[in-house]
Length: 327
Image (cartoon, rainbow, N blue to C red; front, top):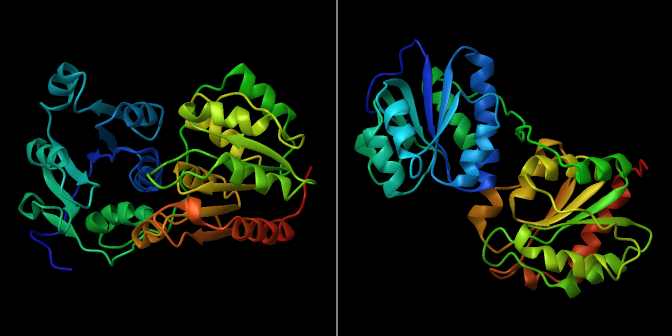
C-alpha cells in the first residue's frame, strides 16, 4: 500500500478519533480503543462526536480521555480542544463527509490517517486501502497498522459501563442465565422492520421457549402489543441506555434481531444469534455478526419483511438444538 508520507514516528502521546454517528459504528470502534490502551497505556485518546448519542456513549468509556461535540458546546470544543496539537488524527469514515473532512483539515495533528477514496485524500499522511468488504472493526484496527506497520489481532468489542435502573436490576436478578430467547423488533435502517404478526408467529412456533422483547423507545407500543398475548413472553421494562440492553443480552440463550446495533451488542458477550439482513452485500459483510455461534439470513429484497417466516423458524430451531439450556 503506497503512503503519501514517511511512516509515523513516535512518541504517541495523543490520538484524535473522528467517530461515526450511529451506535453500531461506536461499538465497532471499541476494539481499537482496547488495542490502543493495551499498547499505549499512557496515550491520551480524544473522540470527536457529531451526534449526542455518540457523545454520551464515549463519555462513559474509561478508555477515552475526553469527548468533544463538534456541533454543540462549541465554546468547550474551541477553547479546550481546538487550541492544542496532537500526534495522530484518524478519520473513521470511508466516504465523503463534509463535517469529517472539515475536522480532518482543521485539527492540528502531525500525522493524519484516513481511508482512500474519502474525497480529500490530500489531507492525509497515510491512506488506508483495504479490500472491499473488510469488517468495520478491522477497518478501525487498521489505524494501528498505519502507526506500527502491522495489524493487531482481533479484539472483542465492549459497551462502556452506564447507570442501571432499579427496574432493570430487578429483571436481571430474575432472569436465569442462558434460558431466554431475545427478540429485537427495533429498526436500525430503512427496510429493517418486521410485522407484529411475523414476530408472533415465531413465538407461537416455540411454545416451550421463553422470550423477552427488545425495542427502541419509538417502538415501545409495538413491544407491549407483542408481549401481551403470549404467555411465554416475559414483559420487561424499557431500557435507558445500551449498557442496560447489553446486561440483558448477555444473559440470553440466543438473540434474534434484524441488522441493528444489537448484532454488535451481542458480540460484546459472544451471545449466539440469528441475524436478519436486508439484501445489501456491503452491510452483510462489513457489519456482519462477530458472535461465534450465529446464523445469518439475507432477504431477497432490500426489506427484511420479505424473509419467509419459515426461514427464521428453521434457523432458530437449528441454533437452539446446538445450545444447551442453562436455566
